[in-house]
Length: 434
Image: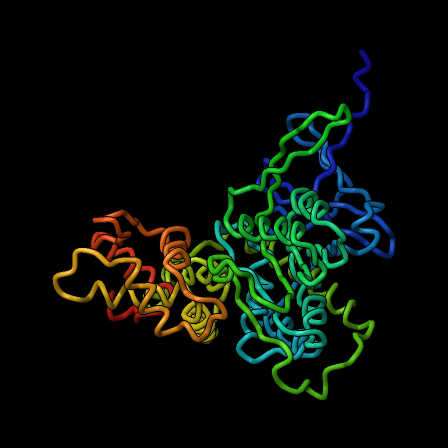
């Protein structure tokens, strides 16, 4: 037996080491080499490979990896020190302000989101960041500039299919940067929605079936959890998915005159310098940051609290936390207004009124249809029918319906459910009903 036989290395991106250290993949474009930046007890060293106690040998992913070579995935070059978190935050803010025209309020959110991406694996839920607007509104610029300083960003806007996204997220983790406009076909968009639906909560991989070399079906789970930046022109139809985004509306005011039309070479250099400092931030913060439930706000919905508290947990400045709550509150109200303009909201509005009447035991589908038609019928091109309203009640609102004396009715027992949904849709005020 040859005891000197070299152990084959396992290509690795990130590893928590048995001695408490942390190893992160880094990439030097000048030397065209990859290695590990290893952090132990406040000290950083660079290693080409790491031998573990169990005999396992981990090695960095090759610098010739196609995603690294074509800069589809960006990495730090080394871990660089910074003066303080406040100073680092100011650097990020200045960098974003130079190259992207964001509102003052959203700039604060974007800076905090960048920090969150570097410690996202310390949390179980995450928000998504979105730039929404028409062609030429600056979405791609914002995705490029913000994405370049996020943790292990993967730029997928040039992908022709979504299959590589599943594999890359599962292999590299990190931050997905995507321009939804590039995914024009319904099947691709459907697959993309699966990533967004499963990717903001830890522990919900996407299951996909691949084929083996022997043409056998091989079900596989892909981990898609992580922060995501998306540029798109419209909204998603799924209101639950919409509620996971913190959104900046682009192109609604004249572009600042000091914003460069073309990104200069200095932008990439600045982004690399910030990634290097943010790697040190990750090293120093990952094991100390955690969800801080003190930052919840009962004035807002559970969903908004769920996605916002992780973001607030990485912010040291109480004034900035309050500014973000104020901005997020405006975003939630905007979402409520969008929901309130839907057919579902109109049906809920009528049901709330009917259930408030004394002596009621049920509400009939027919009377909801009649009231809806009189109140909102002019907004629709086709007639409002019992079948249409019944479909909304049963399939979309998921309310119980049964037949009584030959007519379909919604029983009074559904009133609590109607009330809660009406609050979520912004039909009635949250404070009024607790």
